[in-house]
Amino acid sequence: MIFKKIEGLVAPVFTPMAPDGSLNLAKIEEYAKDLMGKGLSGVFVLGSSGEGLLLNTEERKEVVERWSRYTSERFKLIVHVGATSYREAQELAIHAQEHNAFAISSMGPSFLQPKRTEELVMYCYQIASVVPELPFYYYHIPIRSGVTVNMCAFLKSASKKIPNLVGIKYTDSNLMELQQCLNLDNNKFDILYGSDASLVCGLTLGINGGIGTTYNFMPHVYYKMIEAFKKKDILEARKHQWFSVQVNDIIARYGGGIVAGKVIEKLIGIDCGPCRSPLKNLTQAEVGLMQKELESIGFFEKALN
Image (cartoon, rainbow, N blue to C red; front, side, top):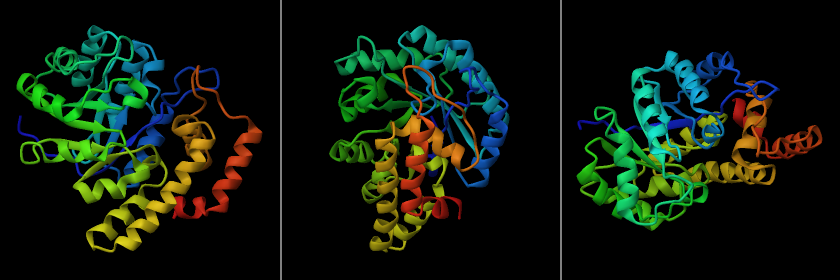
């Protein structure tokens, strides 16, 4: 497959919901225009931040259909189609192809997780093979999926069986494995780094594209980091990374990237509503406390300017 690697930042978008937990698709237009205005390279839809596996199949299709209205060469749509059943994932992959997806992605099944490389390769092959002309990224996020197969071994094996495999959305702290994947077959694969709290580490290893939750509301902090890194101003790059670490630390203490992330998105003007069960939404008191902590590090000045 002739494929150009993604450069820049992709936002793993939240799924807007109404107070009763139903989809709020009308909010996506405002959300998409906000992200395009911030210079994002695209969106990763229905992944972890998007609560994708908490939605049913028809809901997932509706979300893709609405986001597909805003896709372009400069604003790419990557759709997470992973499911416990590879047959459901196949259905979602075909639907994504029919609605202007630039690429599809899938994490490994979180029930009866594959333990051997060949098992994960077969699962991904069954999904990718139904859309052979659409780029496929494996979504490596072992903390959520429980799939711990070595990614370098996966790429070596899967590339022989899945012609449209182009890379990995790599969300893990194993930087040795990350570098092995980046350097495999003369840098053949597109490895999109999934940890915004350590993006500067990814940059030192050769990362060109990233997918991280805080790119939704403060991407320019990371663009400044990337620019400083390119200029070899490592101290400046570290300064921006330290701010990211402070923000991510607050997020972690208030429910994590999905729960706290949706609240922050609302605080800066895009109300994506509540999260679905089993996620626990913050109380108003908790929101107030988190807002004060964000204010104490100058978040709103840096996020909105």
